Image 1 (cartoon, helix red, strand yellow):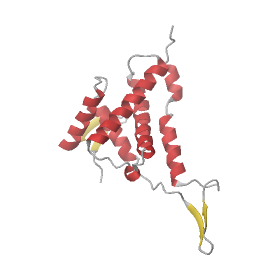
Image 2 (cartoon, helix red, strand yellow):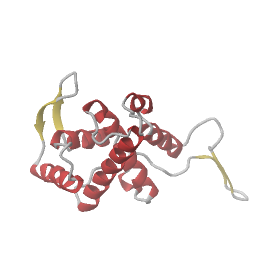
Image 3 (cartoon, rainbow, N blue to C red):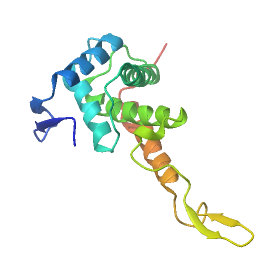
Image 4 (cartoon, rainbow, N blue to C red):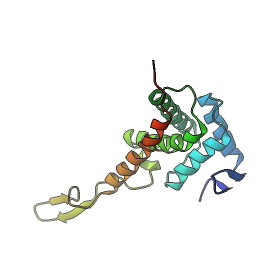
Length: 173
């Protein structure tokens, strides 16, 4: 069951938001940790919706607030440093969202909190032999395991918009 129920127009603008008070307070807490006026409720809502669309199980708690705020902050800092800019233009918000989502998923997996991840991260077993116990894993056999697919998705999210960042890069003297 989705946490969020809202409609967007063709440009991605949120038309109606129908979220519970607990989600509103969750978003407010994330914004308080971020302490950046460049972001608003709608921006954080898009990040949460993107996480949900990937199957991530969002739990409304302090750890999740900190993880999402940290991920957004880290991505924003990286983009500002790469482009040598002091504020993120609105045209790059979709890149911030994708990279922040990738960062959240990467951090959750790397800390071993795979309960919230959308896929089973157990290594795929290709064959099992009972007598004399022989197990063969499907790694390198032309098919990707769930973990390899997940890593590919996270890598894609973390590297989203690399070419677009070049368009906003300023020369540092």
